[in-house]
Length: 145
Image 1 (tube, rainbow, N blue to C red):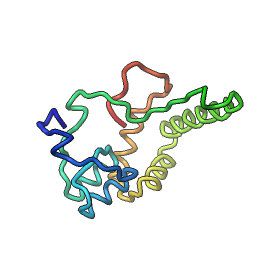
Image 2: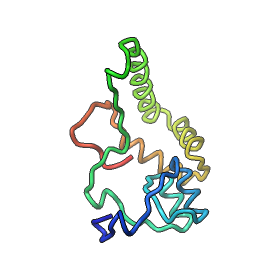
Image 3: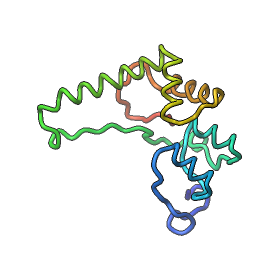
Image 4: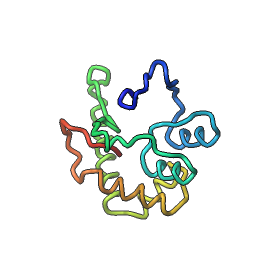
């Protein structure tokens, strides 16, 4: 916000709304003026008449869109199996995005609560392009997803 001449402490009120579908619903209801979102919901917001204030890619601002953390002190050694199953699920999900387009689009449709085929296609294309085939940790985070 500072990059656009706004003081986060004075010029805006930051509130927690919920997930991305709830964010768009709050904008449509007039409860909030805007929020951070990515396709496919960004496309739905534009179709609803909202304007894009800033694009993180154009700002060359890197941030972790999704972070996964684990604290071995918090989790007992017996939970190692659960952590491995979580990672297997992540890898299988990425594989499904890359190889099962209709399944991936249906997942987007269900959890983003969007039925517009154009918006779903844009969301799918973004995820298919951004998720690496091999999800290895990197020092530099991707631009968005």
